[in-house]
Amino acid sequence: MSGTRATLVRRLATLLTLTALAFAALLTAYYGVSRNSGAVTGDTAPAIVQISSVRDALARSYDSARQGLGEDTADIEGAGEEYRSALSTANQNLAQALKGTVAGDSGRQNLRTVTGLVSSYADLVQQAYVNRDHPALRDAYLRYARDMLRPNGSSSILDRLQSLQRQQLDVLDRQASFGWVLWLTWIVTCALFAALGWLLVDTQRFVRRRFRRLANPFLAIATALLAVLLPLALFAGQIQDRLGAARTLLTARTSSSTTPQVLPEVLDIMQDTHWRAGVVGLIPLGGTVLAALVLAGLQPRIDEYRFQPR
Image (cartoon, rainbow, N blue to C red):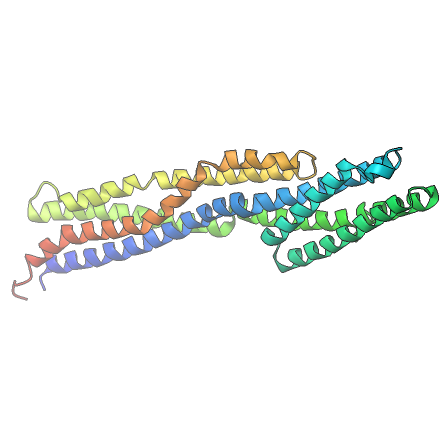
């Protein structure tokens, strides 16, 4: 094999290997950022909001029950329409949260326990209504209901919901964090693409000197394709910024009565991330195209030396 052909074969093999490694690293790095945008908007944010809605609705239900049972209309209206509406909202959100919790098996078991406790809490309020004409019994049942509901250390309904929400926020924190593994992956990706770009340019110089041709169009297009991929780093940064903003907003509003209204704000923050996340599917195609361009640019030059004497 002639020296030129051997050099071209080595360069071709190195370019194809670098292309495979660089695009595999890019796919890993970009997916590591983009995969969480859908998880936050589709699962984690709704789950956090649902639990906050349950907490808010249960707190309102007790205040409404206590007020309703102290009024003259308690014989007709019971604990009151506001109480029934708040309790219904809490039960509906509990059912939805049980289907879509992001806190794993422990969170799901916690929600089952809370569902049972809410049923017992409603029974106590009902008993307060049954004994509405006996103030001592009525107030005792309301006090039991309050103690079952309000924070008292670890076992009340609101305590359990708060613990579950901390688990959900931990999940959100992991999804929105740019950890050292991702940092390392992006550093490796940048290094591989820098090496690939340098080798493409150097190969074009070698081909131009050896074959006396102004340019190799396939290698030139391959080099340009690398420049086209640069916005992917910008897209990844934008996705990460939006994830951080969503995390900040949800964390700040979890203890607020306005938490149920925060979901549209989160969706608005994240709305432009979905098409950026979808770009990840084009990365393997880009790698395939670049490899084909490299092959098309060098293989004809290698073939020119195929039948030369050893």
